[in-house]
Structure formats: structure tokens, C-alpha cells
Image 1: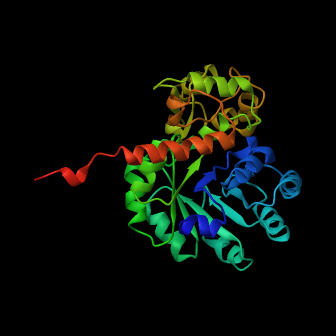
Image 2: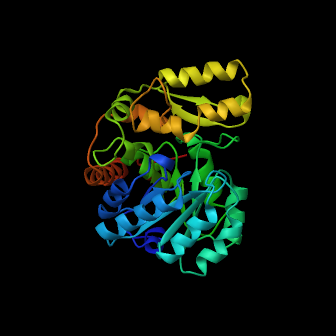
Image 3: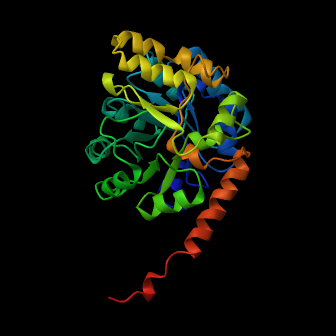
Length: 319
């Protein structure tokens, strides 16, 4: 137990990433039941769908869970916040936008607030506004990314030395060695996204999971740099189409249409990798199987312990 797990009321320092419109209650339930913090990402979903997801989780687990709101993407932020308060959702993560106006009202309702940041300035701002936990997300992460392109390995020590509240690391973490590395850098937990997609509990198309397992070191790609809309996705036929469209410098609105949630669902849920994109972090390169969430968490703990025990014996070094 550390400050992060105590604040979240969980046994394990594992947080599920939001994952937008492909998020669903069953994966969040599996994560919470396995000892982590399950999360439903509201993406651009309407309040009625979000409410049904919250109620589904409430019926099937008594464990803590979170709702992630991507502030600049979600068109019904006020309505979603009302649902969170009315249904007494214990934890909220705020991402993709300025969280400051929403932190105090949520904390007034005893909601634990996590803020996703891409640099130490954002982390300090969130802490000053009352955030309980910082999720520092590196450039290795799947989906929409920061234009600064800071890696997790450089971001975490900078953020953890800049704030006094618990920090969770996100981006490029998918095994126990990554967990140990993140916590060695000062994080008290990790947020997992891509690795949780490649589990039996994730309700995405098998083609998506199989593509993650097959991905090599160059298995992901960045699109959107020309439009300052950086997104890391799996290298697929549709991903190559997006990159070609970007090189042609199509209008921004056309690019945004090609990367909207409809196309995300086509790829991730329907398995049409020629017609839609699928988000994927660089951790894809070490994903080789599709375990249950519970088995994955057990493995992460075992691997982290083994890596710690086999650590280089610095005490034997002499200068």
C-alpha cells in the first residue's frame, strides 16, 4: 500500500486508461475485481450511454472505479459531471484539456480527482487546483499525444520531483519490468491502456488483439503532426492511408473526419483494419499473448519482484 492505492481504495497500483468510445463496463469491472482501478472512458459518448455503463458497473462490482473525461472531446461535459455526482462515482480522471475549473466542484462531492498531464507545468497547475493524483503520460502512449513528445523515462522523474501528490506513470508500460522502472523513477503506480486491450476481458475485435500481438518494434506510427493533432496508432492499412492523406495536406476537417470515433470503432470494435484506425502504444512490441486481466496483474507483480531481486548490485561498486 502507498499513498496512491490508499487514495483510490485499491489493492494494486494499476489504473486502467480511459480508451474513449471503445471503453466498456466489462473490462473496467475485470480490472477493479482484480485489484486495480477500472475506468470507463466517456470519449464522445452521450450521457444516456455513460449512465448505463455506470449502472452496469455498480450492479457487478462493489470495488472502486473511475470515469475518464477527455475535456476537449466530450460534448456533454456538464451532463457527465452531473451523472458522476448523482451516482457517487468515487474517482474521476480528467484529460485532454484544462481540468482546473472542474476539480473543486468534484472534490466538494468527495470525488477523488486524477489529472492526466504531459509536462511538469501542467502537473503543478493541477496540484495547485486541488488534484489528488497526477497521471503523467509519455509519448509512448496510445491515442492522442502531446506535441512536446516527452518520453515516460524523462517525464516521470521531472513530474515526481515537481509535485507532492502521488504520480502514476503512463505510456510504454506493459510488463513487470516497466512497472518497477516507473516506480523507481518516483511513480507510485501505473496506468495501462494497450496492454489491457490485449486481454480476454476486453470487448474489442479479435483482429485488434491479434495485431497487437504481432506488432514488431515498428508496429506503431504517429499521424497528425502536420495538423498538430498527434495520435499514436497501430501500423495498419488504414493507418498508412491516414499518413498518405496527411502528406497530401488535406484540409484539417477532412483529416479529423478520417480520425473520428466512427473510424476508431470500425477498426477496434468491428475489426475492419482497412477502414478504421486502432490506437496502440509502443508497448505493443512486447505483447505476445492475451491473458485475463487477473492473470496479467499476477504476472506484473511477479515480474516486478523478480526484476527487483535481480537488480544490479550497486552496493558493490567502488569509485
